[in-house]
Image: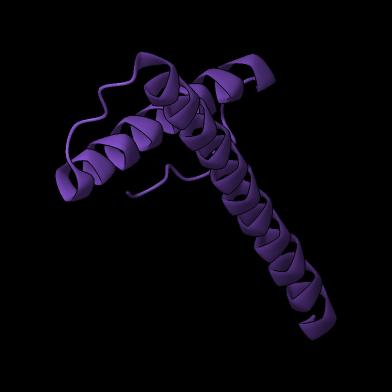
Length: 84
C-alpha cells in the first residue's frame, strides 16, 4: 500500500483523520491479503482482533513514515543553510 505523504497544509485534527482513513485502508488490505492466502477467517472474535492489530500497525507505519518525511525536510533545510 502506498501511504499518503505528510499533509503539511492540514490542521492536526485533519491530519489525524487522514492517518485514520489510511490506516483503516491498510488494515482492510492486509486482512484481505491474509484471507486470500490462508482462507476466510470465520471466527468473528479473531477477525476483529486481527483487524485491530493491523489497524495499529497501519497507524504506526504511517506515523513513522510522516516523521521520516519531516526529518528529511529538516535535514535538507539544515544542509542548505550550511551551503549558503
